Length: 79
Image (cartoon, rainbow, N blue to C red):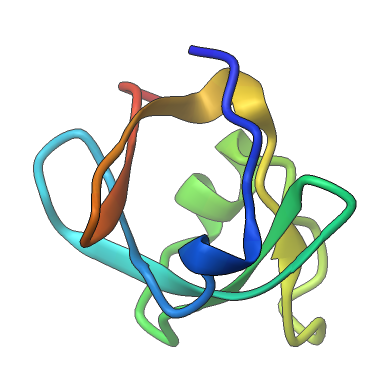
């Protein structure tokens, strides 16, 4: 999927392929979504998403990881 995010996506839950919440879209800038990750997101998931340091407040959500975008959530493809 080629996701192009808009301001309407701010506040949506970001869930993995199994439906477990991994964060919330905090802001959208120039079509890119920035996710505030759930504190329980493991280092392995962060690594697969390219989210390095756990000190950051929000991370860019790569379009290649997005499977679907609905009115309520952004669902990621299998990582």
